[in-house]
Length: 570
Ligand code: ISL
Image 1 (cartoon, protein in one colour):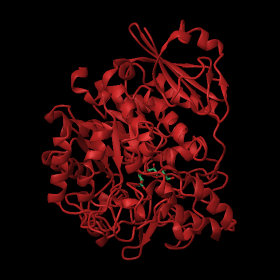
Image 2 (cartoon, rainbow, N blue to C red):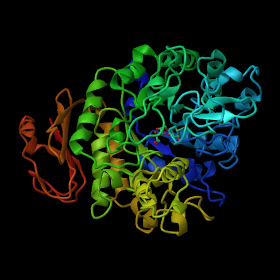
Image 3 (cartoon, protein in one colour):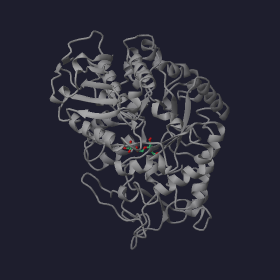
């Protein structure tokens, strides 16, 4: 029943702990810093906090490389600090979900240390070990067991000299992939999940969880196609939504969640997922997860690779998001996001971070939050935080960007061109310190931050916005309240209007006799509202303005630059 599905009317706020708030002055955000800032989230009105990983980790990929699943990295604090944070969230009526990274561990996890210790170690089969390719000497170029490229440049296999075999790592070489074929691995994962649920957490965001089932139907792991702009093969068809992934997630449901009732949030991060698989993952009848993060809309401006930045076409964006709305309309459920710790800042990417920063940030929030699904707000998005404009690799910290830069330049690319791609698409754009106020380092730390704050913090910061009714923050607060108060936002049927219009993003949400009409101008020019699709929405010109991003009412039939309106009929 829908009674236990509280997450349908919820808004989730993602915290990247490293960059949120530093309480002890070491320049890195921590749990106590978050606890001190819980009132910011309560003021915004969000229902759930998703914490990016805080477990012990060598931090090769900022915590997405976990070396102990039952603890807190000392950089972030202690288990006691965690319990205080959890209690503080619960006291304010917010739930807290953990990031669960179990496609891979750190190479410094005890499981991997055992697994690599010898070919006949009982945990050998917990990871993907393979000999060199037939006829090749281990360690020579091309001797990798398959030609797959890692997500973070270079081959997805690393030779371990000690035993002369390669292990699979879809991400960095310090992130070896677990072998989910092995039931002991699955048992170990379910046990650690139960351990956190026993501690009181409210669910999990499951990192790349649709990559856990590798396709062995040919009896082996096959080579992938080498696509233009790539040196290695694309292994994605052999590990994305693989043959046993639904079985594994259902087993997880049965082992971990079903015995406890279903008041938890399970959100699956699923790069490359199709609408067909998304429906299987999120159909409540099937008992797998509650919602997925799909990637199609954030891949539209990628060329041959993600740093080959292409102009965004609004028609394509509407086609993509509209198709996802339709696919999961009856069964299943969407997660809605523009931003997270892996994406550049939405206001720079889809809006205008210059003259219309405030208007376009509010427009983006409006469009997203009025879709059908659960919206995610990434830290700083509620302030309209923008990309940094990196001009030097010395400003970068992310292993993905740094690896890409060195591989591309070694392959002969022009460093300036590579840096230009990273400037627009690099993950560090999302990872600069949260901008609390206009004091040094944006009030994030009293020490030296691990990554420099965006210099615009003197203007763009929470202190300047929280009490200003015209701020991006106040607008997000209104959007969240609207979801809580207006069932049409949660349950209303979605219908896209004017799909071919290059600047207008328009749709309706309908529930019984209420219709909400959303109209948004994705351009810096006035936009006349005169599309035939609008005429089908009877009486729209007399509709009440529920929420807009401009102060004065303006002309009914013209949207101002980056103007967005939510109108109510009935
Ligand atoms: O940003 C990306 C690389 O271009 C994405 O493809 C990203 O790698 C993918 O979404 C998986 O992301 C998740 O797993 C990674 C981690 O680095 C990301 O931070 C995490 O969100 C490996 O754990």
